[in-house]
Image (cartoon, rainbow, N blue to C red; front, side, top):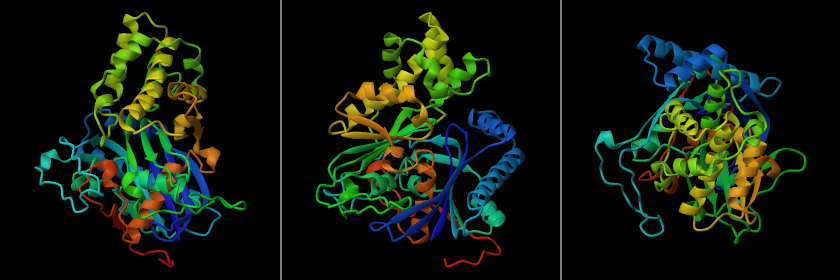
Length: 426
């Protein structure tokens, strides 16, 4: 089945689109990446999204227009990525997150192996989390003529989960290793990790065709209960915001970490930032621009001024905050440091950040990117939402309670069908 995955993250850089060919179910899933590309938002639309996510008031009319504008941009990305290829039969669209509120009371179900029938206690509605993604699936379906699945986070939140991260199950299927523990570290605006234990009992865990980008992971029925994942904190977001402020808008990001590499890390200031309560909060946990956003960045810059830091020193220290918070998170919440870390997302292209994560973790833990094992780092998240849509279409639950804190596994996503569907085999 040909499925398109669409994703735009907290950095609001643009829409990542991936066209994949999927077969099997969940434990025998095979995947071939056919095409992938990133389509930037128009400057005006990007600014509207950033303004809304930053808390700027908006009328309901403006919100509806923005919702449709984002959906139209996502639909155009879906049309673009399948150009010159056989058409897709299904779209999985994450949409654009503009607000994310984790649950007010975290739910910590016991491990499935000790109490498989655990049911979370009833909670008042205001204890549940809330997450809003714009770019409604019905509009995408109507423009493209393709069945579209969207609003993936709501079902997990409804059963007490964080609604994030949702990709760990796919990460484990595609990137698990027979002999090595693995952390897949996404570095978007916010960082999130998937911890994948070894699969020693399997003869193989991941193979790639020599003639195509084909993935054929083998999976064990009891494996997913040991997978872990959570948001580690800031990825690129604080760095990007600081670069924009310190360059008076002349730069939007630190290309390859060059600015940070020219500065010096202020360890006392870094130690202060690492005492933020989020970093000590145990998983399940998630966060977003609402916490690590403009106000947080402006406070960081004020504190840097008190240390008389140069702009380069400030960017270096903020970059180190991302690297150190990743390593600190592993040491706090994993049974041991992983054998390898696979970076993905926009931050995986920041060579300086890559080296700092390696330095923070030490030589016993090898830091690579998912490109090094054959899975495109820029399109991995879009691929994941193609898989989640495929699973939803086939009534396969997509969340992992061990990651999100949900009471149980659920089907993720709402299905929208066009009034006149494209002829397909679905």
